[in-house]
Length: 349
Image (cartoon, rainbow, N blue to C red; front, side, top):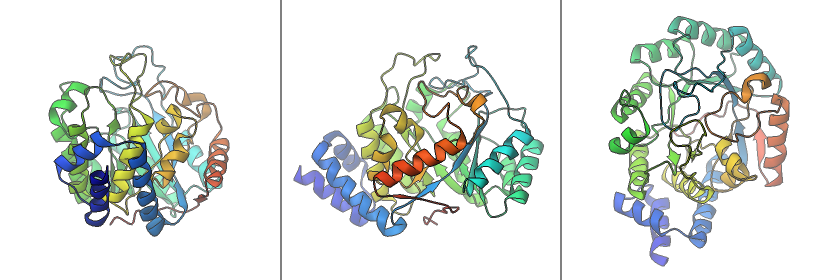
């Protein structure tokens, strides 16, 4: 136990560990070690971000997707999914609602939907930035060409979220169809960073076939990429996918990984995700107490929320945007943190 505490101390001091040390820490973790880790993670988080929690207004604008990822509820071959697309007017209306509620970052998230051509997306991005010049715009729309990424950036997009999902190529192949590869996904992230985006990556915790070695490789990849944001959440099965009967990832391991990420990249933006809130009623609060500093309430119209179903039992599908916003504010206050109205840019430049 003392040896593992020393590894956490080393991580705090040097912000890096070897693959073997990561594996040892992940496999040897227990409740006492986790508390030790979280205390140090909070210390770092408070040093850089105080008790502030940044909010991102999430707009899930399409659940059509050309891909067939084995874990995802909106995969192409799920014929039970009720598909929808938001119009440009719908998207701008969501932004208007969010702006009134104090959001200064909007996240446009969707499946890889060919209906939204580069031309359409550039038009939407330009309008949002024209109407809300003091806001940051984040895109989360999957793998595109470098030229497409450049076009969105030139139109005003500030940030891009693209989880690498797993850094291990063989593991990646077990979760995705043959048309997708870990190498291409990672290249997209390097392209985005090179263009000038604030870049977010991340992985699922407890996905099928995942080992401690895979998680160690994820941490090494993230250290090398040095992103501005890292989104991690537990794997949660969806009943209409090939992984319907797989075990979900645990709250305990997800929180532990959040703590490790905070010590490895102390200035990074780290969301307490909706998936955390789905597997435990206080999951997001626990995420914040493990080192996270971002929450992402939903601005999507209530009429489509339940259809953006990446996994089962997703929370807040029936709430209006204002309910989500003020509910989170109360939750954060209950543990001594404050929702702040700002763009909330990453300090990890």
